[in-house]
Amino acid sequence: MKYLITFCCLSLFLSLNAQNLVSVTFLGQKTKAQLLQEFNNLPFIQFGARYYQVAYTTLSVQGVPDTATGLLAIPDQPGRIYPRLVYQHGTSGSKQDVPSVNVLSGGEGIVGTLFAGLGYVAFLPDYLGLGPTSKGFHPYVHAASEAWAAMDMLRAGATWLEQEQVATNDQLFITGYSQGGHGAMALHRAMEQDPAEEFTVTAAAPLSGPYSISGVMRDLILNDTVYYYPAYIPNTALSYQTVYGNLFTDLTDVFKPVYASMIGQFYNNTISLSELNSLLIGALTAYEGDSRPFRMLQPALVQAVQTNPAHPINLALDDNDTYDKGWLPEAPFRLFYCMGDDQVPFRNSLLARDSFLAKGVTNFQIQDVLPTGDHGECYVPAMTGTIIFFLGLQQIGTVGTETPENILQISLAPNPADQYLTVSGITHPGRYDILDYYGKTVQSGNISGEDQTLLLKPLPSGVYLFRVETSSGYATEKLVVK
Image (tube, rainbow, N blue to C red; front, side):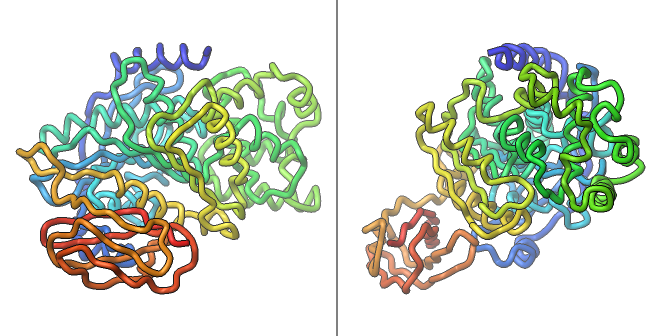
């Protein structure tokens, strides 16, 4: 309740004092053919993309005016009415490792061009403390600022979209990976808990995120386990000290001196996060025999955190869990993760699942998309599952009409299917594709302009996407194979 009241008051203050558009800088464009080549001929790509760096006013975690940035990517065909999509990015290695900058070098920002090619107006916030304009240390995995930075970008971006006559409908999709999974869930929660009901979420899919900061992630550190991403710990400690101001007085209050000196270099922006990670692994291995991040912490601090639930660190961790605080998701909701994740333990997703189910969530599913996949390997199947999930809800219209453009109403039976599948509702000849959750086409062919029964190839049991396109439109439906 304290979180809800605080966030609602802050949201009102932000809405009165932020989200002004500062500038929009054209960064580049890609044709549909270029996007198809870049993204392995993903058959759902319908458009090319134009992309921009957007600068807008917001507030820092101290309530001081700040200018943040983000990447805005739009489909290249005017005259359409597109849904909006927010993509929250993963952990940044440096202040410039953000979508509005790294889109030019093939970094994570390129996913914005993919979503534009899929027919979304895509917003990719750089977050506070990151990018070319925002000041101060980045409030890493800070749920509230991840949310308001995105909402302020949506508000500011709407001004430019209106000026440029880029039409959007009421649909709003949310996703993000890793830290972005945390940010995506935080944004979804903030929008649905906003008493002003300014935004209505169409669907959300957080991916492989650290949703349980006070539980799973805390236990990972305090259990003295081998973990090869120790830099996440000081990044989080520095973040929460920046936000709350009462976690420690000096870095050596938290970290042993040999490690504190390295962490200070990162805080002063003289080394990157990946460089800090390498230094910490080397030091831990030299002094402790392996990369056990627990052992870079001061014993007195560890004891205080373990024995005092009201310790400022514990309170800060709890304040940034994203699945709790009395929130029951209303919009269609999916969680994708991988059990083999070596950076963000899969138990984050399971704990969030258990919390939502206990509260009675509906229209919710969770899937381990690649059980053996590590954090890097999990990205493509998780993103592909998200694309398929969103496509089943996406509506694209034409300016001057009130109904979605070219959406066919088809049905598949039986579904789940075994050997045969009957497709009904087709009125013109066309082509169909069946794709697995990795985006790979596993069966395709021509389809007549009437109800038709298809012979399915032997396929592993699971969930697929059936897509049909004819001269009168297209449709996507989920297909379950027994």
